[in-house]
Amino acid sequence: MAQSSVRGEVPAAGGTTSPESRDVAPQDQGSAPGRNAPETETEQGAPGDREDPSARHRDDGRRGGKGGAGRRGTDRRGRRRRVLRWSATVLALLILGTAGAGYLYYRHLNGNIRKDALNLGDEKDRAAKPEANAAGQTPLNILLIGSDARDTKENQKLGGAKETFGGPPLADVQMLLHVSADRSNMSVVSMPRDTLLQLPKCTDPNTGAVYPATTGRAMTNESLGRGGPGCTVATWEKLTDIHIDHFMMIDFSGVVSMADAIGGVPVCVDANIYSHTSTGHGSGLKLREGTTYVKGKQALQWLRTRYGFEDGSDLARAKAQHMYMNAMVRQLRANAKLTNPNALRRLAEAATKAVTVDEGLASITRMYDLAAELQKVPTDRITMTTMPNEYVGARVQPTADAAKLFRLVREDIALDGKDPEKKPVPEPTPTDPAAPDADIAVQVQNGTRTEALAPAPGRATAVAGLLADKGFTQSVADPSAATAETTTVVRYPSADLEGDARQVAKALGIPASSVVRSTDVSGVTLVVGADWREGTTYRAPKEDGRTPDSAQAINASDDSQCMHVDPGFTW
Image 1: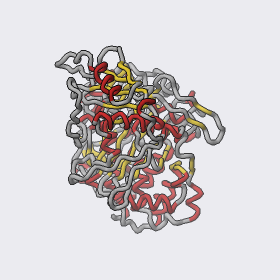
Image 2 (image 1 turned 135 degrees about the horizontal axis):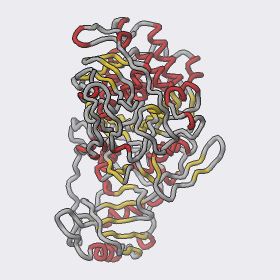
Image 3 (image 1 turned 45 degrees about the vertical axis):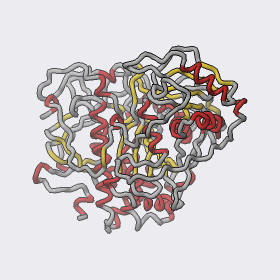
Image 4 (image 1 turned 30 degrees about the vertical axis):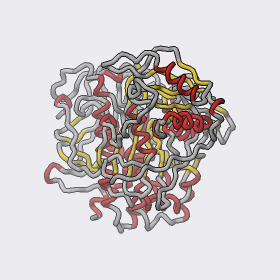
């Protein structure tokens, strides 16, 4: 690629202009309140973007620019997905090796890399490592974390919220990057920062401080303040039962330095946009119609823009962030053969200074080896998704589709649907073997209710009796009201009960894929689903390997996307 494109300079023809020629509006000057506390719906303070739970579902500012007539509220369902800022840059670090090979071996770069412990959770909350395929290959799972820490003057200036300076950081970006065992495809699953989960017990390796498991549910972004990124890793493993090999974490200033070093990322809008309301809300993003190479603070404005994109919802912001991420992947791949020494040096220096990684990645050679593995995946086999979720008040929780998405990742099934049919991956051996059948306590719940059918009466009692006849004499029926579960499932809360749960499933002919770890149960729990409303023999439905529509999958090779601009924010 020519030197001009490294600098972010592109021809002005066809609505494509360089970032240097853009009329960029100043940053919003408002500040945000404390973490997870109510605030006005302002973009200042993003990427932390601490917002009022109730404001999340409304547009309470008057429109700026043309058509400043103001519009309150948008469709609640239109805000169901949030892919958090910084995701594109963090992902870019993992692909950076394709552009920086010539300088990644400099010894002094090792000194730039910060490191922390990989997993701060108890052994019982950890996921087993996946079994190798027939060729001896195993998948690779990396957790990407974006920190909102206001721990330096630069981060404070970029993030706002002055009263939070030096406070506990929040993991406002959490994305699991899964690389298939054969390196043919890559899947990215992001989790909304305000997902409610039971956080696991974590121990700070530096201070010895112990953070007990939460008795109720808390926002998942609080995990980072419970000892460090290793607690966020522990939270993911407990929820998904997916073994995580590495993590990479970046903060505000790291995003800016990386965006500048890359030389700009092409983004597209279908009309002139100025993200600014008459009440002072908005990111300040100001672009002309067409394609612009954004970098530095302007890239941050794109990532945090809500007002002005489509319906002004979080869904629109997530879509814009996915576009940015995909464009960055393509840009890095296009720059893979750069020979300009200064450009390569900037990339290497920025990448090593921008991240904190686990000890297994804390060297230039290990990071380069990882990048080499990721380079094997074609861009058109990279799929971006968001964890399916539903509202609980102003927060969200995982849905049944989320459990399915996690199962596909655990079983190394490509989310783009392009994999040839392959034999199931062997289930990993439980770390704790099953107890004798008579010693396994099982609670049986009736989940046979559907939208069209009332619950089948007495199913919990009948199946508990069936288990007792098979030797599970501590099986009891849950007397609470019937719930709705599409398929029969066996849940268990921690790794020390995994063997017991699998033993129960095996006795009833329930497939191993229907045995899942869940923070919603306190012991081995069998939920009799709508697929087993009668009889004593369970017939498992054929497993569906398709990615749920609610995951909103986007392919990284799609370069035709352009964000639609709300007419009220044009200029």
